[in-house]
Image 1 (cartoon, rainbow, N blue to C red):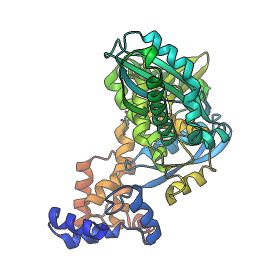
Image 2 (cartoon, rainbow, N blue to C red):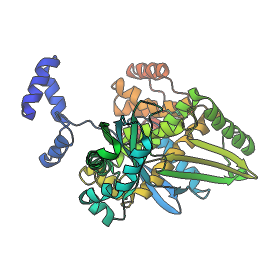
Image 3 (cartoon, protein in one colour):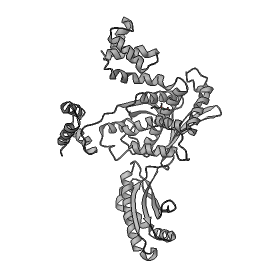
Image 4 (cartoon, rainbow, N blue to C red):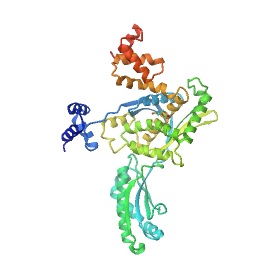
Length: 447
Ligand code: MEV
């Protein structure tokens, strides 16, 4: 079916008012047909585009460089929280981050039902160079960029599943996330392995080989980044009314709770991923892979735990994150999607390693703001203020009504019911601010 035939089929079968639905869907099409075509071709059966807000969090000082971080996310408060943390740490030396390692892993999972795995190892070792030789066409460009296959080992996993073995390979994929490169190499290894095993039947006996699958692992514990902030406890000056030391201690305690209590750890890490996913999406990376990997890493000690850590070291407060991030700055949609290209431009066209640093910092910043609010004012005060516009949009408030209500709640706690109550009163003619206030509100409302 053509795109228009697909839309016609969809609307006539699944919507009540196909004209209105068509208006809505086509309203989201890009006004430049060539840009729309790009989006149509990113996936299959594209009928429209799905907008997400694209915001920026400025004032991030990372390794002595200033960044404005692009964030694509639908949740209110996240960009504000990142910006707030960026400002806070700007005056305290900023963020310091380092890439610890950049190795990625993939497997050929296979079943071999022979009796002597030592023989299999012998055959593997004697023919090992053939894997890289046969994949040379695939690896040529990556090798020229300084990457490629790092090593391949044979692993016996038959204690877990009868006859189960793996070829486990390590890769360096430079500035690309590398999924296609790794999977192509692995499929080549699988083919080579079949040939090697067939050629060595005399040694191996009449044992069959079944390639089950060849696929990268999105768990990349050797593609690791660490970001930290630190300051003198005396410099915390956090402004919430508790002493600096009490703040530092309470913060560390909150992190310890997220370390030992999985129910808290999931929410805690979700907040970290608010920052990380927003950068990952804005820069055209794979947030599902990033999420799956982060949570697996959070469980690496056998219990789901916090991705961030905090300590009081002498007279200093230290707060850090360590997590695997497999990101790319070339390949995928990075050179295709106009907003993604813009995000990379904003960041000064970072390398994959720089993007790992920036993204880890966004996660740390997000977590700092969340924990800071949680242990002082509570999360709802700030969050509901940010969420207020969503409530008012649901009520279809005008710009002037929105500005009036935002002004009204400036020094009050927002709740859904309080927002509805004030909105209803204002619709009924009540004006909560003075005449002078109203003219300011006109400006706030953009009138
Ligand atoms: C909300 O999206 C994220 C938080 O719940 C994170 C946290 O509790 O640390 C605020």
